[in-house]
Amino acid sequence: MMNQRMNIAGDPTGRGGRATRRAFSLIEALVASTLLGMIVLAVISAVTSAQSLSFEGQKQILAAMAADDYMTELMTLDYEDRALLNGSEQPVGEMETLDAAPYPDTVWALGRRVGVTEVTIVEPGLGIEVTGQRVVVEAFDEFRALATLETFVPEPAL
Amino acid sequence: MTPLNAHPAPRGLSMLELLIAISITALAGLALSTVMTAVARSITSTTDERSALQRAHAASIRLRAFTEPGLCLLQDKPDEGFAIWLNDDKPGGTVNLREVRAFWHDATSGVMTVERVTFPDAWPPELQETFDLALSPGADFLGEIEAQRFLGYTSTEAVSDGVISRAVTHDAGPIQAASRFWLTLSMDRRAEDPTDVLMAFAFFTHREPE
Image (tube, chains in turn cyan, yellow):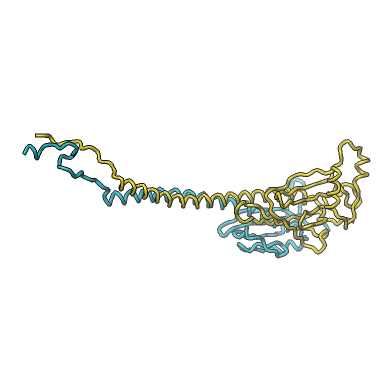
């Protein structure tokens, strides 16, 4: 009996040879996998959001340039010819110059529209009335307007 | 009786378990690094494109400073550059050397520059006027600027860098009759395909030389 209970050297369990193993249970493995997946997903989501914001920034730059270009072209037209373009719109991805040359694919996400309306500006202090065109150029994507430019062109003297 | 050992000695990993654990960790790391590499590449591409657009935008603003007060396009040589008539400071309706601005594009370095004739400050005004020759409408304006450059009578400023190619199109038959023109720049994006940007320019006080 004493032999049976004697602690054999090198045997930490005192059970005569085979160590007890404790492995991960299925639940522990699933929890660990889930945690790892959530961390990776969070990192990828953050990077994707940053990419999306960066793309929005690019669109803003392109929209400002596109609106500026259109306004520049419109200012080369005669007063009457410019009025004819009131309400004209170039849909998203179909931007072209006034001479119908297509824009490069860089502006695939943008469109433009122009509004030309006859207005009279009154300066009561000076007793002046000036008639002219209010020209509004807007560059937009499929969701919203990104850049708007507005200018006033006085009616040419007769 | 020997009391039971209340604190068993810790059991380490066997060689096989260690190798399996290392292998699994390596596979997980490889998968993660593949994802992060793809993400990093995408970020770099986006950064390059944004840089190209910003350079193009800056070039557009610099060019507008010349074209908006300018009078007309004078000449375009597709592989070299184009020239505009900036002003008629020496009145008469003719183009004089100092009224010309030449825009060059060096395809090798990708740099776009603007060059103008500047005579030495030490010259008296009368001498400068004498050397400020009038050019006919059909003259080789870009060649004239090059000739002045060889004499050391020009100054150059940078307009943009990273320009792979440029192309000028305009709205009229003869180039000097064009009241508006478009410049298409292909901006370098390093390893990616170039970004093409089209810009519109107008001469609000358009006038053809006599």
